[in-house]
Length: 267
Image (cartoon, rainbow, N blue to C red; front, side, top):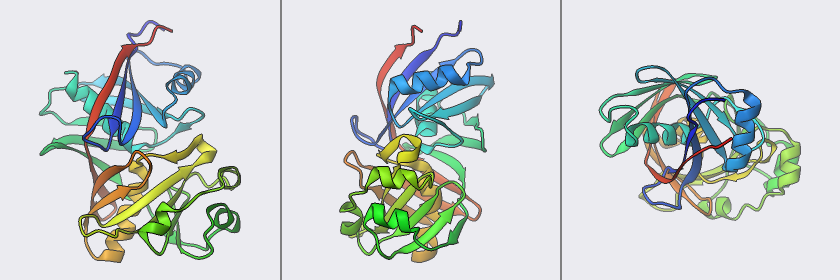
């Protein structure tokens, strides 16, 4: 490859460094092979690395790779990408950014100190708790939903129950669910709900903060709580906060981000 291959690491869904969800962002001047992008993502070894290539002013092709597989959509890597493009001057701060992702076209813009991203709302269907997933999570009963973007959402009885989940990750990964959310109402009035997200079959044991999960959590809790604007807290060790505004079949995710590393790939 002859491209510049600038690379960044950004902590997303946080206003402080070394919290939230770290994402890699790699800027390309020409197309790259999937094998090369997968190797770079494995080298970065964060939950997702985004690869960007300019198509037109303010429009970028974006692809997302975990350390082991390509995924069609990723919230925190989209947030990190928009943050880098504005912060590093590739796009004027007042201008919106359009990302052509494998699954959807995503629009982002600055909004009063936050970055607002337009995402499709996930479609959820009532289901039973799969026996293998229940055993892996230690959950015997829960309100369960399946989604288009996530494999399984389970509402537990309390915030403490979500915090105390200790999954058997090999067993959960063998279920090939594509991602599992555990969630509950928040124990504090400042936030509406809490969650955790596991995707061991995609090489992510526990994701620190998951934008795409909130495409399911937003509609779910909007219906449960009777409100369209919500604040979610993901209870991973790093933790992070996601604002959600539900708009029918679409929604807005709001987050903040901090760049912690900047460099150039030499291979």
